[in-house]
Amino acid sequence: MRSKRVLAVAAVGLLLVGGAVLGYWSSWFRQELHAGAVREYALEIVAKDIELGDGAVWHAWTYNGTVPGPTLRVKAGETLRVRMRNRHTLTHSFHARLAGFSFEHDGSAANLVTGIGAAGVLVPGNEHLYEYRPTVPGVYYYHTGFADREHSGVQPEAQGLYGAIVVQDPKERTLREEVLFMGEIGPHTEGAVDPFIMNGMGFPGGRKGLLAVFHREGNAGLRAQFNKTLPVFKAKVNESFKLHVINIGSHQHSLYIPSAAVPSLGVLGGRQWPARVVPLAPGAADTLLVKFTEPGLWLFRCHIPSHADQGMIGLFEVSDAAR
Ligand SMILES: [Cu+2]
Image (cartoon, protein in one colour):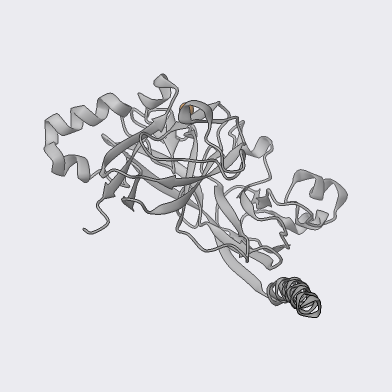
């Protein structure tokens, strides 16, 4: 009887040790597998005129013609390469908010001062290859790292030169991911322009403007503005997806999404922000795990009222899972 018990304990022990060893090796193997992989993106800095509604235009500076620029995705342990060409009329660069890269890939004025990595500061027409090996999963972003008197006091980020970098955890299940940049519009505009934008879009008059367009042009007129001047995300009831939110501006912003569960994965380790409002200091970011349990056309906004009434609104169009 006793020997049977000893055998059973030994068998359980062996299983536990075997499981731990297997887990360690599979984790090591996964990391090694990703260590060799290279993700390469091609970016071009180009001028782009973006319509803002009511005849207003933003003469933006962009990566690849959009604000924000393309989202760069890489798994932790992989190599991220960015081949960038400057097709704009001013000098710019690429600067990543990642950790542990070498000085020659900084893309800053200090590269010109030292002469190390000076080619990473791009005069018009030049091209450069930047390289990183991020190891910590999370949301980061890139922007131009060069600003001097050539830009006549304009913050180049405000003119549209930014985009997200998502470093994925190879061990994590893949969910749909969306990106939301909050900030202010750059100064190179024509016509009546509200100062606050999300993902390069600002709805004239914000919340009040929404009703004005509906009364004037009806539902069809409002829908014509979806993802033109009004950022709109689609979702299904009970679908969980990640929303990476970044304050790229120089003002404080805060994000309010009604009804949905929005635990903070990036800052609070899965807990909700008190009062369900996400505070974002200039330059700060968070990742939210969004899940709506009710269908609807949910209006999200910057919680600062004057921002929400001057462009900073958007919609989640949530439909029943069966539809
Ligand atoms: Cu705001």
